[in-house]
Image 1 (cartoon, rainbow, N blue to C red):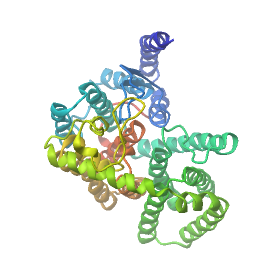
Image 2 (tube, rainbow, N blue to C red; image 1 turned 180 degrees about the vertical axis):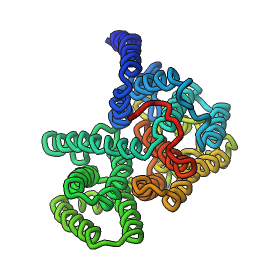
Image 3 (cartoon, one colour; image 1 turned 45 degrees about the vertical axis):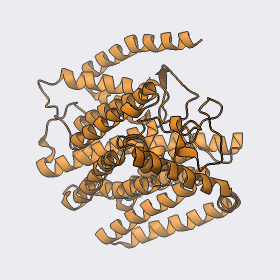
Image 4 (cartoon, helix red, strand yellow; image 1 turned 90 degrees about the horizontal axis):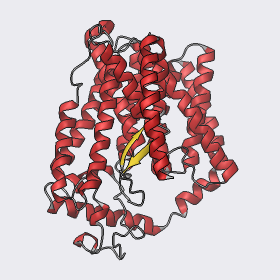
Length: 446
């Protein structure tokens, strides 16, 4: 059965990918279709793991290749085939910091108990960087960027349908949609929600306003259905940041009406889900908070005692009775598939523990370089479409970075792909602000 899965993958790879590459070259307008699916598959990961270790409690469990990567290859072949006519960018902004961070992760393998597991994560980083580079070469005009975010509204509809099925047909207490965990879903949804909310606040035509109200309503439904405490709080923070920007930029009674309408509808939704929310907040086990603190202490010990960390994707391998890091935890984790340690509940301490304090500094510099570049984009953008999207991304990134202090899900493949998509958008907006839209695109997305 397992062998059949690999055979199917290779058959698809050697047939569908070449055929689609031919189609996109013969019919350039289909590039919109492939771009949309490339973004869509960041939410619904359809992939296959080589050297799979599904029992492993880490951030990567195999050398995964999926539909995102296949659509990336298809779009790359098209871009490269047009290299004589269209200029490809070199290394996008942020590449140097990402390269230094990646090098730190490679060096951390010196201390890794299982270097194969480290290889899983490093391979994932290479995949998401390739995706990042491609998006930097595709999202080269305001029209393309805006249309890409319209694509994301279809993703919201898809996720909401799955959440509704899980909540009302299956009866799940905390819905997660197509994601491995509800916290991952909330982080993913909140990014697009903030941008869609900004687009709503700037919409002038009634049909457009109604469409975005519908989409944002679905996204809030997903957020509330997750019952993720950190996720709900961070989403509210992100939306509030967008609202303040929009009101400060161009005050209008229409915007006040929109936010008032959402507040009323939101209160009605919260009242309907009040029992579940209260149960989630009030009856949360004390052991959960204690475990968070214990894991954070262990992560700090690892980072303090290992300048290069304990090895990327090796945190749980060191959370066993064979190492001193769990001496303060009254749990006998032995590292077997049935009895593994847990991951620390913050991506920042997880990065420090696995790759060292210095590499955490590089990681923070990398992600915040885009945060501040996006803020500059808001003030520099002459195109209203780009200004509106950049306002939304300010709220999106704030929600991600705050939630990442409480959870490690930014390292989930879905969320990492999405983050690199956002970074590519920020780079492209910055480039358009500086050079205009005359830069020849790598793909003829017209």
